[in-house]
Amino acid sequence: MFRKFDQEDGFLLLMILRVCSQTYMLLKVKNIFLSCDTYLGPVPMEEIKNHLYKHVNKLPFIVFNSHYHWDHIWGNCAFEDCPIIGQTGIINMIHLYGKSELFKYDKQKLGVVQIVLPNIVFKQFMAFPEDKITLFSSPGHTYDSASLYDILDKVLYVGDNIEDPIPYVENTDFEQYINTIEKYESLDYKVLIPGHMNSHGDLPKKRVIKKNVKYLSALLHKESLATYQKKTI
Ligand SMILES: [Zn+2]
Image (tube, rainbow, N blue to C red; front, side, top):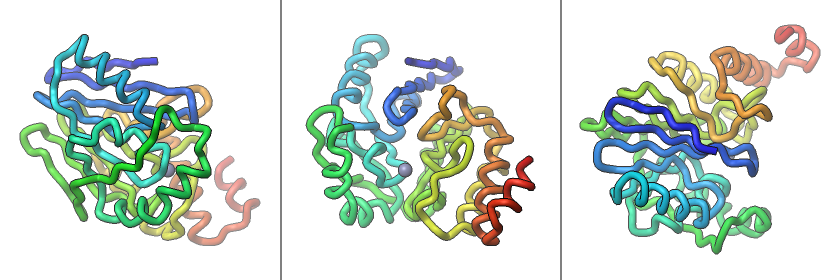
């Protein structure tokens, strides 16, 4: 399913894919296509490329990986000759877990997956000033998590840092995670796009973000389940 948001200077194509309720977001920024993560393998990525080349234009691709998890990087091999960007920590994490995840989730592969690492990394920020796009480190769901902010279209892509109803926590630095979400809240965005939708396929509303913070803060303060539930009623 495609959801298309027309924008003045281009468009945002959001594809909601069924496996893992995963979303796929692509931005057309002036003369490039910016692929936010690459889903489960080269087959859907080649389909997207063909669709765009046929109906839009043959423009170069830049890929942004929000973090190292398999369901966000397996399609990188469809963009081997393109700039693939991620936060510095992603390289080590793919080295550590790339092979075992490939084996463990083998059945989810869409096409012949070869692990392709990002070839450009940044520590805190990377900006595309002409296109008004910023990539920034946003540790939370994982230590290497990064997000994309499209200032012109007011779109924020947060990878797996926000989930409805509660975030899937792998990184135990909850304070850092809460800081990241507070940073999101300080940004002027209209649409927040997560790496996975809820079961109804809705984009998360502000109350989901608040709920995520409450949950993380309960983990940070080691609150009992009863206390947490009382607060969320
Ligand atoms: Zn993830």
